[in-house]
Length: 75
Image (cartoon, rainbow, N blue to C red):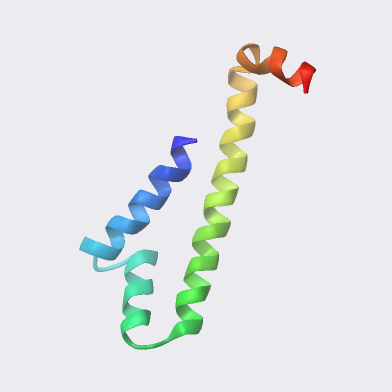
C-alpha cells in the first residue's frame, strides 16, 4: 500500500533535510557511533510502518469490500 511507502519516504527525507525526527535521530546517532540508538530507531520505524499497514489494510477492506470479496472466497 502507498501509505507505508509514504511513511518510509518521509523518514528518508528527514535523514536528508531535517533537523528533527526519527531519520535525523538515526543519522545523528550513526555519526556519533551510537549503534544501539540507531537500531532502536529502526525498530520504531518498522513497528510504526507495520502498524500503519495493518490499520489501513483493515480500513481498505471495510471501505472497498466489494472489490475483494470474490477473491477472498476462492483463497
